[in-house]
Length: 313
Image (cartoon, rainbow, N blue to C red; front, side):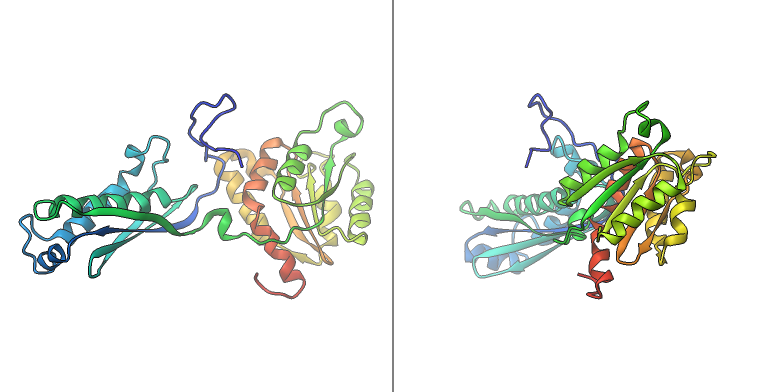
């Protein structure tokens, strides 16, 4: 796996997450601070000179989570929805746990880790007058949820991509969206069996899809022919074949596209099943292809277990 904070020259670079949809994300981190049992006795009795240690540490940790982007150079600034910190006092140490939640386009683990670290440092600062042998350690990420990992499944469907374009089919234009879809789906682990280009003719579109459905292709993605032009016939050719229409996929793609490009409202997205095959009709632009990969992968892979009657993985 490549390092995401390095560019092609090896220089540091902030990751661009502007193309990712915001989702609910959470992270829980933990750590410990070891200290003398007598220090813990004084802490429990509120007899330390600087006051209530754990209350101060909790507030410090929450504040630190809010400031993570200012402390860590390439960390994204997030709108945190919730941060909480808990402490477990043991015989010779205090165990610290911090959870952070957000609804953003990137994970919140750095905020949780920062909260634990600063909470431990605050405990150290408030107890150092009576204990110089304290030790902070075992700071780690315990749980991370949300984003693409939340919807991961090992199954990858047999896939084919159909590009609809008169100009590309005649050799006058160059396909970009189909190649982007192929690269993205293959990177996600999908075996892409074919990328085919046909003209904007209903009979050619129908023939290609019928062939793939009969051949057991599980995921069919089309690119192009969803606009308002007189040659845009993809939806008319394929929607009547749907055995089930999947409005949720259509709405997710539309919502994400509309949030980035106002003219996305003029595209006629379509998604549904034809027997055991799942078909998604996308606009023909490279931007639409990239948006679709962000929205569909890997959540759409759950559909194939459901089609087989296995329920949610």
